[in-house]
Length: 548
Image (cartoon, rainbow, N blue to C red):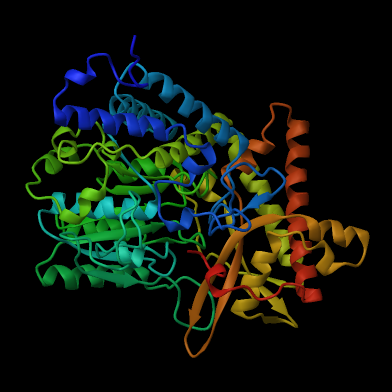
């Protein structure tokens, strides 16, 4: 008896040509699930995910599989995937394979993604009427937000980006509807900064840093925001206002009073989208943004420490009606897969291709593992852990002769901030003889931290042990200065995974766990000082120096 190929039913030979083509496509996608997990986890994104051929890490220094020996204090940038996240991704793939034996790949995949939307809403305690649009990265989610805002406002908006100097490097492109990379998540080759056909428009960049020689947030941020909106609306265009909560340095702007003024002066002419990609905000604040009708950009790969990249756009209730009325979709936007959109958006979904992105999905599965673990820790303990970590890190940076802390200039005292009333990003300058070192050397120190520098540093046994430890901290942030050479700051970051590692119902054990984390921070700072003292960090190529 002749056996049919795996995945083909006995009656498949009786299907029409289009139906056979569709089934071949589904079978091919099922075959993709058998790709090695490490390969899948870095697929379905942009070139930032690609692993270097020599050291097998991506542009952020992160491997595709767990490396528990590396200390992670880089949650403002990216973290190496944890064992828990990796195991969840592996199990999710097995479960989808099993489902695909009984359902079409797209049907099983859609159901899985819809379950993830519900899980994400549950972790953030959001209303079931909040919609979730998944994406390969927070940068891709900015294009989703622009698409949604155009539909809601009824005309192409001018995007005004608050904190343009403190957000992802791709925002300068996505804010005006341009490609931020040379390749899309589906593998389509494009021109970086080339217009997304039918989506491109204008944008305005509002930096957050004061123009003077210091490193502080500008004091006129609210006035700058109001002025930019007023000028744009006077020219007859609506505004998509991208506000910041929080930036690479932990800054937030504009103020709540400014947002109230915008709502009063320009109802239905300004759509606000919150850049919360760092995910350093309380759940009450997140809900308040959505209740006010704001779109929210979120990722699972910053504070939560999930695998890079895993993005989502949170959409307030009621927006789907505007999207269902969209008559023409930007041709360049059809690269988005149908599965990114919520299943309830039936009319919109019907216009996009059925194209599961397995890499994006598995990274989101890993991110959900981290988010769930964090919120499983009692709220009072989360707050206490962040308080004690902040106090310890602050004091260690202040005591170091080679580090100068960069104040955030932000006071988070509102009840909506919950545990994020505490600082979780600690930026600092590197000094030699009391003066900041060059940008190139700052980048070299950052890279040297990720490597075993035992041979280069030498000296005492204790120094060599510290030098051998590999660790990730936040990548350098370049700061332009008026009439002076630019500077770069590094960042020590507290992320969700540190809190879950510290947690124990035995408070004595939890205190020991906390001290263990702080001891690691101390060793990271000692390694930085050794690198500066011995001149052991050789300058790295420019492409490795800054956040990409």
